[in-house]
Image 1 (cartoon, one colour):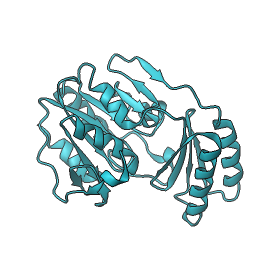
Image 2 (cartoon, one colour):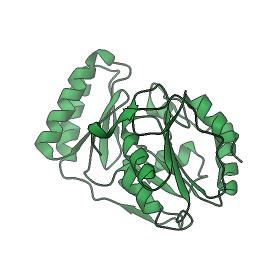
Image 3 (tube, one colour):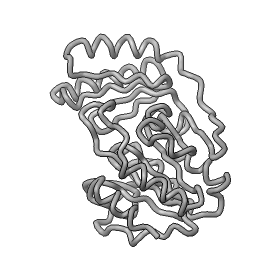
Image 4 (cartoon, helix red, strand yellow):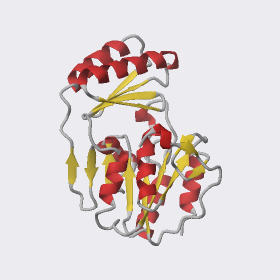
Length: 250
């Protein structure tokens, strides 16, 4: 997928979701949970947990979370309700049977960690998140260093061969490998997802690979947040709108 394939998303929200025959793929931060100042500030929520449990029952298990979070973080935030998960943007994938597969860590991660730690020492509000297969530098609380953070991460990626992945107030250096779209495609070849129509909700540019995947598989993507260039077909204003749309599903 290239930038040239992106277009301005539709303002119209999607019609009410029909659970029968649907395979539902959900991002976490910015989609099911509001973006927090620090990643660790996102915690379990009774409303979200209850909603996911109801969706899982209505979809006969055809629900997966596809997130940049670590597998441990996802399980904690969602209180272990979802078995089928793609974590760290697809580098770790746990199937409906609970079998976990993951990429091998890239040897450049140690060098990247040292460089990022030296940079983060400049200011207390810079936060490094070590996910094992990737390193994320969060600058939401130090936005004046955004360009410096992006430039450093891009340079490290060039030097080490790590994948440079920008996000919402974060830059990530990840082991090269599967994307969110690759994970969705893999899930769709397996039970209970095979033969269903895929729908993916996400908010960040990192979700575009997932939107592209569901489009090519006969489904559609839903962008959560302000309108921007995207391959998603529909849009919902924010996390509250996304939760309300999912709660109305029948």
